[in-house]
Length: 291
Image: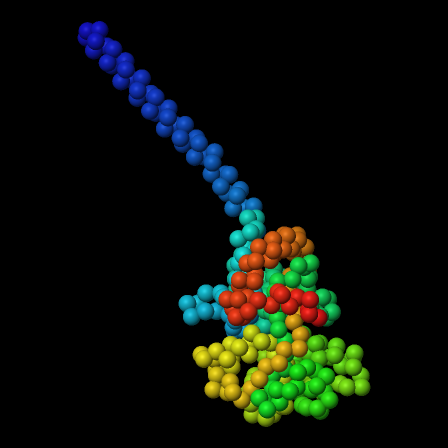
């Protein structure tokens, strides 16, 4: 073997060793990176967000089977803002939402929830609210002059029953407490989601308490179940109320993270855009009227 052949053999051997060494280094790097990826996954806290599945446009499942509605999409923005948390949205009933959040099956629930003292005993309320809701009277069109609970009481009109556990019941009860000489006759119903449109339309009650978003979806939307009665009914707003996510009592750290995120999201104008999308108007300019 001449000198030139020996040199080629040496060069080939060196290259082979270098390639093997490089492959060995890559394998080591992959092995070193893997625990880091696992750790990143372990650092993400999984959160189950329960939402009422049939309360369009607030919380519902759309035609493609996806979570939708103002409350849901507002919480999706929170999910995007919190890198240490990963949300799973779970559609359910009102009853299961309340029980599930209280017992820890879900970490948080959203359903256009108003604040009540009773709920504060069972749930953790954050510092920052999620949205706003217009509350009003659903009435026959010929009673459109009845603008508020005081007018309703003075006219001695009958109100559709309201579940005692509902925040709308508390709304009327608080009015009655403040106005003992002009009270609305308040009946506690057994159904949480009573079909108040049907009650008023059939004359079973002179009026009912509802929220504008549901009235719009059920009566004014041409695809709503009661669109044919749009000229027979009227909605008169008498209050704009803050709405809240309901946290499990043990979720203080998560609630604090939510507070920081939702405040920035609200200040960015994103929540106003969601209201325009789902409610047809932005309620935040009416914030000073919140009760």
